[in-house]
Image (cartoon, rainbow, N blue to C red; front, top):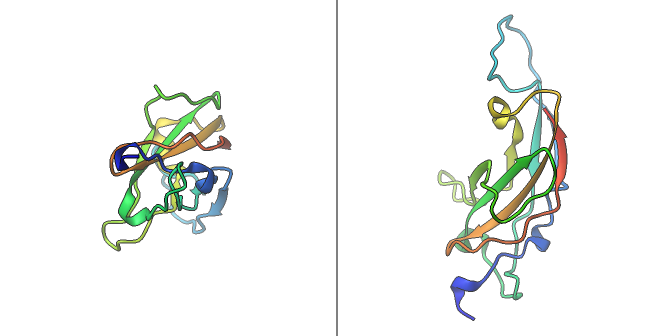
Amino acid sequence: MKVSSRVPNLLVLGLVASLFLVGCGGGGGGTSSSDALPSTAKVLRWSPPQSFADQTPLDPVRDLKDYAIYVNETGTFVATDSPTAIVSAVDSATGNIVSSFNLGNLGPFLSANKTYYVSMQSVSITGAKSSFSPAASFTL
């Protein structure tokens, strides 16, 4: 099997159910902004895949390019969907694997007090995408 046909194994990543609420803390200031993050951020956390779908070992730092994050109101995700956000798999400043994304960053593109669903795919350096992770719901 060619390396280019290897697909990251999202079952190992099996994560999007790991949607955590993290308090931002702080306060003060009497001003507000329509693009300000909510006072309680929704942070999506995951573990990177450790193998390709064919069970070949995967080194996330070397073999992954990014994570494609999808958000919609239905919870159904298909291959023709465009990602809502793309997150680099490796932090360029530290060289460490990335394993979280603050969904509050999408606030300017989503409506407050509305339920959304999120799913993601890992993308290899060759562009191969994993299956969609199980969907998780959140409300901004």
